[in-house]
Length: 126
Image (cartoon, rainbow, N blue to C red; front, side, top):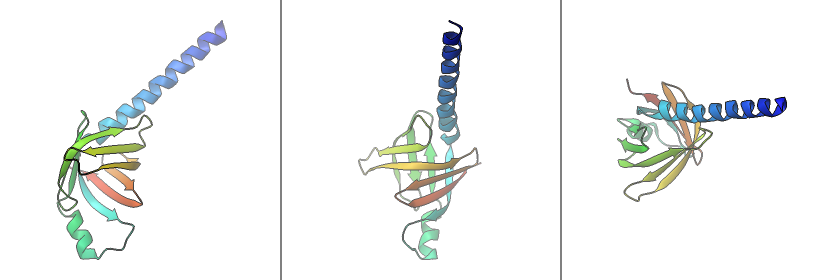
């Protein structure tokens, strides 16, 4: 009986930790991010890379919406984060596309995403 209580306690604790990790990911993601660097799978001239980065922003909200602006393109739609907080999925409202990004790192000030080998580094807009 005692081992069952310990097992249930550990299970509840683990569940709470998993849920809090996803919530932290969603909370940390929910802000406006400035694109500060890109590493595409193909070589781009520095001038083109600078144009893509210039003025580019991605904004994510806690209610699951996103917008992009600037050289990376203008778009809006919905987003979700997987239960592990490692994958970000977006679906364009305009029907342009959907994308799945690996969340390489996420802090309160920096976000790194990878999609099909292309890496984008973003910094939180203050």
